[in-house]
Structure formats: structure tokens, C-alpha cells
Image (cartoon, rainbow, N blue to C red):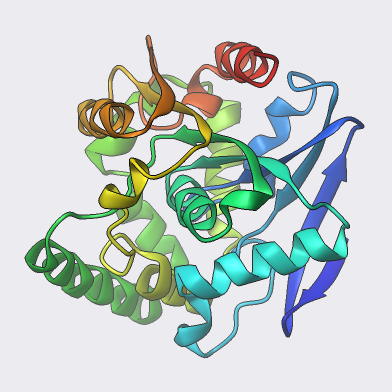
Length: 267
């Protein structure tokens, strides 16, 4: 369905019955990234959404509309319209960073928090400024070279090396999702929601009263370290390192991902 949220047309899919679980995809992805989870996460109302600038959701020209604060306001309004005072929330990569920001801004609306390969942001202003400059250059490259050229560059990151082992069919599906995005949407998303623009939430973790599941793939050493560091700061969290998986656990080990999430939500 298409729903107008605070002036932006959002593409949303609602599947199943039970306790609500909102799923947030990563950068260059779409709600279809969670397709394999539909049969694996039964007994829940799964709410999937194309984040702003992605998939079939509108891509506004104004990059100020893409900040984490604005996107979190959109998610809160969506929950209002769906008459859901509280949900469990799962996010992957950029979606995980968004989930962290939402949980910090609206803790009363989150039942449980699931973070897959997510980060609470960069710790110093110097790091954020350097990353912001890098994100802006990449955003400009998307506009000048187009989506196909950018995706070719994006897919070659060491972060995604473990996905080379996926079936040709699955790799083609992932690539098609990425290529379906518009240059303006990806460019503005990178400027507004990129790691360089994300608020530093490290000091907020220890204040949270939420039950949190943190997941990282064992082949993704950067996010294993971040995950362990987050686990030490949250009061009520557990960290799980998934074997034979890299950055995108739900893609590389979908059944195991589903089993872990089901176990956490049923605790």
C-alpha cells in the first residue's frame, strides 16, 4: 500500500497476524529485502516499509527531509495511523541505525529492539566530519554517474565480500532491488541518514531500559567489535555472533536469523 506520511508517500507492506514487528532495511535496499523472513517469522504482524528515497517510497528533492530525526517522526506518525502504540523493531545496517535513533527518541513505543550490523554512530566530531565529507562526495557521485555505476562500486566493498557465496539467483535479486532505486533518493539518503550525519548515540545506550538483541556476522569484524561494545553499554542486551555470515545475516543465513529473532521475541 502507499500511505502519505507527513507529506511523503511511503510504500508499506503488512503481513501476518500477531504482535507487531517493524522491519527496516539497509541503504540501497527495500522492504523486499525481508521477503525470506515472511515464512520464518510467523505469529507476528510484520510491517515492512521502503525508507525515504528507497524502493517505491517517494524521493523528495529537499535533503533536509532525510535526516534521522525526520525519518523517526515519519515512523512515529505511521504507528499512529496504524493505531499501534508500541511495536518491536528490527533494523539492518542503515535500518538498524534508524531503529537505534527511533528507540532513543520514542522509547515508550518500542517493546523490543533487534539490531543487525548496526552502529550508534561515530564517537568524535572529527570522525563525523570526515565521514560526512566522504558521504557527500559519494552522494554527488551517484548523481553524476547514475545508480548502475554507483551500485557497481558499492557492491565491491569488503563489507559485502561474503555475499559472493550466495546463489546467482539471490545475487541477481539483491542487485535488482539496488538498481530499482533513484539517484536522487540514494544521494539524499546518504547525505541525511549516512553515518556521518547520524547523531552519536553511544552515551544514550546505558540509559535505555529496553530489551535489546544485537547481531553481527562473524565475517564482519568491524560490526562484531561495534556489537560487543554496544552490548557492554546496554543494561538489558544480548550479543550473538552468527557463524558463516557477513554484514547481511538475514540474507546470508536467513533460517538462522529467523530462529534467533523468534527466540528473542518469545523470551
